[in-house]
Length: 288
Image 1 (cartoon, helix red, strand yellow):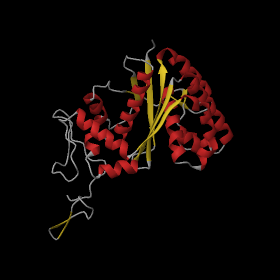
Image 2 (cartoon, one colour):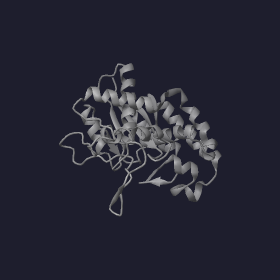
Image 3 (tube, rainbow, N blue to C red):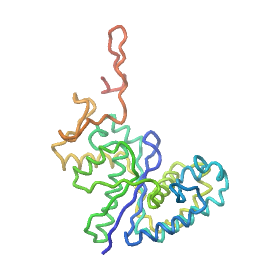
């Protein structure tokens, strides 16, 4: 029985149409081979801390550290991404992709205090990815915990608390220089552009065919899925409130030890005072 690790990264932003979490599951025994082959596949790219580095969005568009040498040149970009994808195909036990519909998230968050109780979008997307990783483990009769590795970033307090509450191992955080996280970044960006394509993506999308055979899920996570998650969480944790936006309590904490209250993802419109009168938001159930 091997020791397995899931590496995940997100693509897009919480104020865009979609937030995508992409990842791979690897056997730890193959980690060194993956590192070596990945770096060989992208050896022509600029260095980060002395090693070649792939950030897919910037590489494909020819921005940031790739601007000087990689504007255009799509045939070469596609070839490099295909080589990188083949490394994923050779070593990944499973490829996972989860697509969070932000329009649905914002709509629900305007009714329920979703962002304060189940976490901001990044936390929810990470939780969905973790559930798919666990489902893969169950199908393969793997009983030992699978380590989850995410890119180190700020603002993950609600993520840590959510994993703790549910009794899951807290994900580890690593820098983007880690080859496995660069692979996760590629998966997340390619899945994002499948739903939200642009001309640059059209030039390189053929590289994805190298890993299609190991794709486990490309789940879209919309309104009905979020409602189901909200209901399950309410059943599992009856002591945690899931209030509506109209409830008096404006900020929610997971428990008394949580360091600071979570603010809603959609910031409420500020109260505007004119001539000592409070202007109310005209939308239904939106008064502050």
